[in-house]
Structures are given as structure tokens and as C-alpha cells.
View 1 (tube, rainbow, N blue to C red):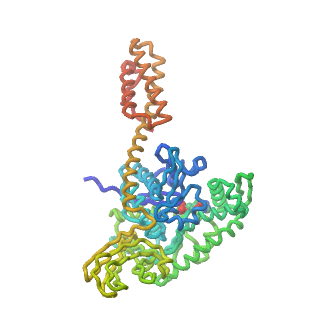
View 2 (tube, rainbow, N blue to C red):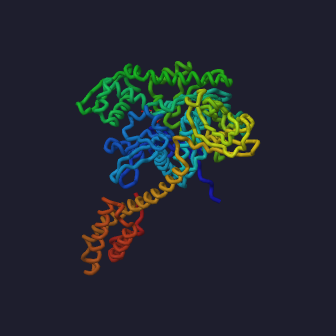
View 3 (cartoon, rainbow, N blue to C red):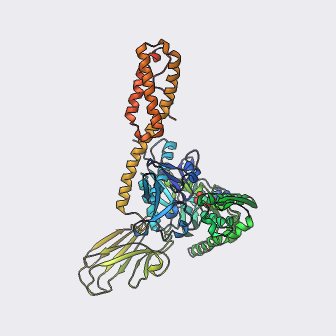
Length: 620
Ligand code: AMP
């Protein structure tokens, strides 16, 4: 019997993404170069380049190099307005105000969804994991910021599906970090219950979560990871610090932003930011169309510029602590720092001050989330026993009632999976259809919350207002994804809503994209095959060409002509393949190779050449 496919853990980050796996030896990040920049470049050929190469050459291919796409996942253009100002690629409005990316390609613009872009990153991580583990990986736990709402979670799931991954669980990033800390990569020697806060400031999002970890007291017992409270902001992160620095670099002259290459400017700002984590001053050099500008920035200037951002994170911390104390957390024992931005000294100082504790930075903040996701994967696959993760719902869920208020069925910080039921009725006589609008958020009025979707329950027999008994059930699964159903008890009518968020993808879109991704997969495979052929044949040709030059005198005249022709033939195919791989028919390529092989038989017989087909170690 073959063993089931492994479950890997994926941290799909705004800036970088990682894939990890956990076995008996503990969790580890897969792939040589652990961090894969979350950057995708679309090629004219229809292919894509993902990761470091795409990031490094972003300035050469502006517009078609897509970064920070996590900021657009499951968002409308209106929601993402603040981030849009700085994105160097074009974001357009899709249906329902949904954010879409328009990529200028040779054949005309191509409009892609943020989910598709993310799926390309996931696909690359999937390949890397399959290679590292030596087996096809098709199941994953993917992390999201705790504060991601339902639309953003669904979007992440859809991206996984497009990448050919069965997303077995969506886990909150800070919870994953706590898992890694508590079970795998973390400190040992701590026993007994402890309350930990996870402060996670990444490229685009901020999360704070407070967890109670109850380690197993004896072998065979279960460890509990219970999230007590979570808070955060999905539009607050290191990118905002870059933007603050960009303003400092430009000397608060917004006009000059128009003259700057935003991508280069942001890169320069980011590099200054990193320097200021270790030094007191750094110099930014940018070229604007009005001339070069050199600005010296001190850490104090920088800290002043980002203080409002950090203060916002501290506000969220206060709220989470107060929510957690309502659930019995007395004192925080440890604060774990996660996310690249927590290398900023001001962040460490302020967090330390807020919690009265030295922040814990022993687990690499870039890797801890992926490691935790891998731990969760191993729990789900049954290879790590005795741990139970109790995550929470980050934002309350409810139904809009008459007058526009929201009746909350499941309140924020409820443990998942969660189920809630409530009865509703009609507000006018003889109402035969009821509209149910589902909202998420903490505010009282629907207009101030996020609308997740709506559905209708029709065919209710006419009754006076208030008589129908409509039972509405909310069910949030372990990944935090919501299903809503309604049942009118007197008539027996039922309706259910798989919450397809307004800013997400419709099922049809996902199906279409999935089909397209298969098409691309085929094209990618063909390309792969041709690239391999080119690499192989170039070596073969070099080898045979050299031998031919030296030993042609031993060949019969016809064989000499034939071999020369075959060498020329393959050489010309190779030339063409190098410039335009699509024009090359892989089978014709193979046939030419085989013909060359046959023609060089005589050289092979005398041991001068070798058989092309059996030549080993050719694949790069
Ligand atoms: P993450 O989303 O966790 O990968 O965090 C990425 C964010 O951390 C980006 O905004 C990076 O610029 C930022 N970052 C990475 N290294 C440093 C550093 N040494 N100092 C300050 N910020 C950093």
C-alpha cells in the first residue's frame, strides 16, 4: 500500500513564502533557498517566472512583475485603495468592484485575479516540496493572518485549489507560530500551562494573538493550544514603513513621487529600513526625473515616521490582552516575535514595554509560521499525535435584520469549529421570500461591517408577519470558513449559502481558472521538455561535432555526408529552439536526435562517440 501524500505547511506571505514539512525529526523548511519571494513575472510566451529571479529583475519588467498580491486577496478595489497608490502594477476593477491585476503582454493585456497570482506562487512551492520529499505533494496547510476575513480565507483556499493543492486546513499565522514554538522548533524545558502572545508584523499585515498552551503532562496525553484572543489589521505592515520612508526620502514632496520609479524607490526605502535595524543612519540614493537625490536618514527620523504605525499595533495588543483576560488569562508569560518587521528596534522596544517582557526572538521570525503550519500538517496527517489546536474566529458573524442592524450569531474569538442557531421571522404580512445578508465585523450596523454574501429563501406560504419561524444556522469549520443555512420550520423550506464572498471568485471562475491552469500546466510541461532537450542536445552536439572534426577520415564518404547533414539539422533546430521554443516540435526534435545517433553509429562502434539516447547525467 502506498503511504498517503504528505501534508506540508505553507506560509504564503506578502513578501516571501515558504514551505515546510514535519516528521519524526521535527519541522524543517524545504528547499535550498528557503525563502521564495512572493513575486510573479508574466512572460509573453504565456509562462511565468516565480521567486527570486522575478524579484531581482523587477525593475526591468515593470508592470508585469506582480508583488505584494496578498494585499489584494479577497479585497475590493475600494478596500485596497490605500495599498494601490504604491503598487507599481495596474490594478483594475473586476465584477463587484473586485481587484484584478492587468498585465501588459506583447499580445495585449491579460487580466488576472490575485488568486491566480497566488496560485502560481503556491504551485512553485508545491514543486519545490515534491522535489525535496521525493514524492508528489498535493495536500497542504496554508496560513493566513488571523485577521483575514472570510472573503480573504476563501480567496486563499481558491488559490490553493488553482495550484492543484488540497488545502486541508487554513491556520492563523500567529497560531502556527505558537505551534512551532510549543511543539517543534521552540524552547524546551518549559512545563505547565503558559500564556503566550504572538506579535506578528509582516510585509503587509499585522496580527496579535494570545494563546494558552497546556503541554501534555505525560506520554499519551494531549497538548492543547487554545487561542484566547486575536486582533490585527490586514492593511498594516512593513510595506507601510517603506511608504513612510519613501516620503522621508522624497522630503515630503508628493510631487516628486510622480517623477520616481516607484519600484526602485520602494526597494531603496526597504534597503534603508533594513540598514536602520542595525545602524543609526543610512543613506538613500534615488534617481528622479528631475535629478538624483541623496538623503541621509537617521534612525530617530525613521522611528518618528513609523511611530503611528507601531502605535496602531500596540492598540491592537491592548485589545487582545483585554479580550484574553476576559477568558481567564491572568498574565502573559512570553511574547513571540514573528515577521520580518519585528527586527526593527522600535518594534521590539515598544512591544517589550507594552508587555513588560523581553520579546522572544529565538525562533527565526521568517520561518516560524511555515514550521508551525508543518506541525499542524503532521497533526492532521496523524504523524504527530497528542496535540489539539483550538483556533478562534477573528471577527463576529451575523445576519442583517430589518432596519440595517446586524444580529450577531457567532461572536469574535469563539473557538472553531463553531455552530450557532437563531430564529428569525418576517417583518411584513404575506412575505413569501426572505433575503438573508451575511455580515462580518464588530460594528452594529450592517453598513459598517463587511458583507460576505446573501441568499434568498423563497416559496414560503403567505403568513402574517412574525409567524414564519426561520431557523438560521451558522457553521464555521476548522479552517474558519463559514457555511450558512436557513430553514423555515412551518413550511419546511430550506436554503443554504456557501458563502461566496463578494470580492472572491465565483465557482465558475474557479472552475475556469482551474481548467486554464491545466492548460498552462501542459504548456509548462512541454516547455520543460524542450528546455531539457536543448540542454541535452547542446552537449551531444558539442561532443559529436568535436569527434567528427577529428575522426571524419575514418568514415565512409556517404556516412561522412550524412553525419554532417544530421549535425547541421540538429544545430539549426537548436538555434530555433533557443530563440522561440514554441515553434519547435518536441517529437521532430527527438527524431533529429535519433537520426544523428544513427549517423554517428560508426563513431560509436570505434568507441569515439557514445550513444545519445543512453548518455547519462544530462539533465541539468
Ligand atoms: P514577512 O511578511 O514576515 O516576510 O515580513 C516582511 C517584512 O519584513 C518586509 O516589510 C521586510 O521589509 C521586513 N523586513 C525584513 N527584514 C527586515 C529587517 N532587517 N529590518 C526591518 N524590516 C525587515
